[in-house]
Amino acid sequence: MNEISPRLANLRKLGCRPAETRAGQPMLSAMRGFCARKAPPRLIRDHIDPAPLMLGNDVLGDCTSAALGNHARATAALGGFQVDVTTAQAEAFYSLSTGYVPGDPRTDNGGVEVDVLTTAMRDGYAVTNQTLFPIWGSADPGDLNGLRNIMAGMSAGYIAVQFADADLWEDENGNLAPVLDTDIPASRGDPNPNPKNGHAPLIWGYAGTDDTDICDLITWGTLQKVTWRWIKSRIMEVHAIAWRQLMPATGLAPTGQDWEALVAANDAYLRGAA
Image (spheres, rainbow, N blue to C red):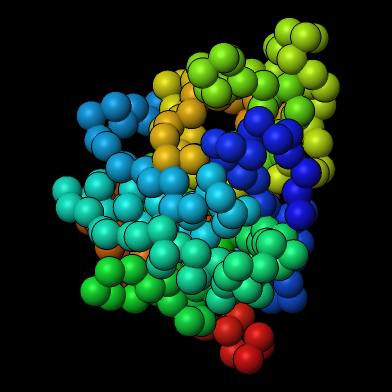
């Protein structure tokens, strides 16, 4: 299991395993028009509450599942409604997608994002009164314009990061720094990304595109502010998710040939993974 400090373990867990790829996995490049356009210079969503939930990520390393549940909620919030997701439902999907056995801490080993997404596409993500089936595509983590297009058109980016030990420093109330940045006081620990500190947050909004401009992550039941240079330093994978049952009709969402291409890539991947 990911190693974290005893104090951190009282408030939040990690749980994203190192990035992996699978043969034929869907790629966002299938949507050529979507990927090529210039992303908005800012994406301010202070007026929209994505209503993030902890979903068990203070007890288990189920961040990959919690992020999926919160992605559905963020997508719904953009459409002016909400989806009920319970901790039990998030933990059940964590078991389904990773092999975690409830009550057996030896099996609480986190998840691989592409495998978690494959499980959701094939078996669905069960929430209250319905089961949601996403389509998804992976993107280049170094393409920040592409990441911003994902945020603007597909509600939020489903990403994986590696925290530095210094990022996980807490104040006397157990809070992380108000803004996570790469300019970290030496007293807070090692400032370099630590492969043991893998985590799956969502990236939701941004104030600008400069290195020091602020982005909002959805994680651990709240919004955590980070800088773009922090994202560039810590990010290890990026995926776009679209929920057919929840997608709001906006001018930035994938439509027409772009949508059909992503659906086709998902269908081809499922046939190959069967």
